[in-house]
Amino acid sequence: MEPFRFLDPPKDLRLMVYERLTIQTRHMPALDCFQTDFTIVYRVVPGIEIFATCRQINDEAGAILYARLRSIIAIPPQIILDYTRTSFLIYDGFNRDGDHDLAAMLKDA
Image (cartoon, rainbow, N blue to C red; front, side, top):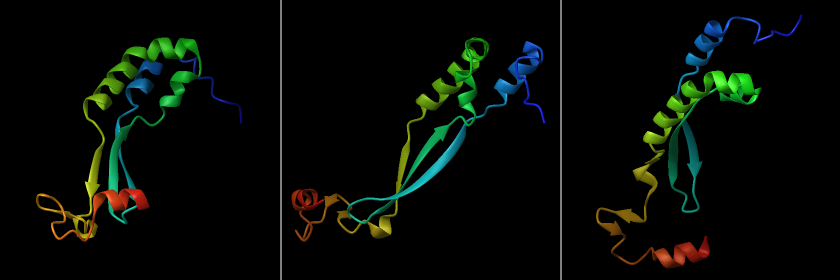
């Protein structure tokens, strides 16, 4: 099987390919040093590597890529906490009973 020569089709077809590179939302689960479950929600453009293949592709798709990146930057990443596991956090800040001293937790981390 021969490799596909992406630059052989007309520019209009290549622009259609670039337009189909959509923004996806990803969820990355994590566990921090306080044993608190949280998820980081962020956005990516899968296939963005195509823009680094050559200058011609980068030039052709620059405006499309710029618009995608601007929309990603406009919505910052989010953090979703599992409140059932955040034992040291309460309604108005940190635990009132003093069982969990933030400075001590950070020092031990």
